[in-house]
Length: 439
Image (cartoon, rainbow, N blue to C red; front, side, top):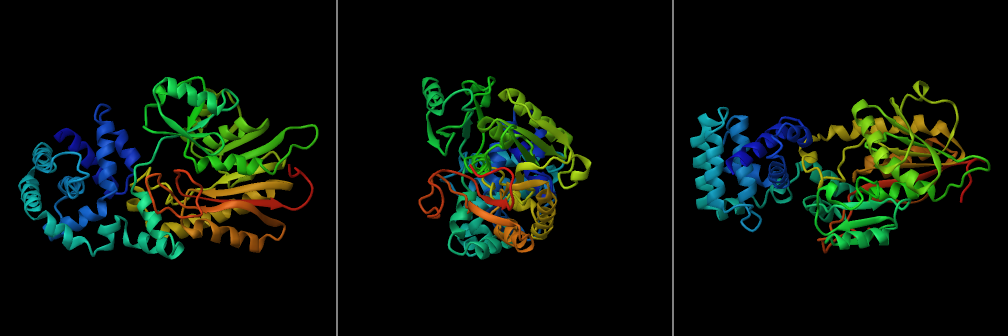
């Protein structure tokens, strides 16, 4: 167990140092990686409480690696009902992990003393942190304030959903197999699932993708229910002009899930743009597995002069870079990596991309703007500003701010679709004129 704790503490230390948990986990020994990811994710979902407890136990934090072990143990042990191990065993193994790490060994006695005191005084220490909003909600204070200001009626549900374990959601490739037929295949394999949305299924228990029936044959993809709304929203109001297929652009397309979904639903010519070469390669991998093809271009979508051939697009999907504040349950490191100033910086990038994409749209075309964010600056406020400066653009019915909803939550916002999904924002913008016509 001490090796798992050591690996998970390394991930936690990396996140506290500004590195993503995904990148940190890539450096963990393969055999330890799944367990380390589970422990680190649980600790990140309880980091506010753990750091508040550590401040009560130690006026000054120890050096980073010892601090990460101490905070990890506190995060895992503070609530006995959710602790992955018996508390005394957890403390013993956390101290053992400190002793076996040269970077933390000098502080192993300090870690031991703090954790033993925590075991003796746990109820009183936890009670002393209860009035601290960061400890109670497990988010940075600025994040709490921002969510509460943006969603004054639903902020508690948004924060609660972000601390839950997400489901494994699938999108069935209906070019290959119907959803009902695939659901039967799952049942034959002993995997329970329930339908969601148009092509989606939610598994009762996650599993390795290779265990999914037809994975290698491209029958199914892993994609959250909220993300599955993008392609149908764009295609729902488009019909191909006579004599040619739809021309579609997927901007900021990696890893290719939405690109594939567009091609599953429509006979279209799709251009997928991605700035990062490694991430662009993942688009090709995704499409290859699904038996689909698109024009994949490694470029900055915001510099169309570098890649656009001058032919306007009938539909554009702009899944813009954002804070990822809507997918916290899948990436619990996000609140601790972000800074409040990031919102304005990313909003400026989103505005630039919207301004650059709009001229590429044919008259009569449609553009879906979406972000996996719950912050209004990256959603409704962004679109309102765009519409105020682009009189030929009009808003069509779209989900707007789709707030995260856990299937285990009984107090989900009433305006959410009845499913288990991440937080997203969707706007559908129409360009006046004659071109690709409404279906």
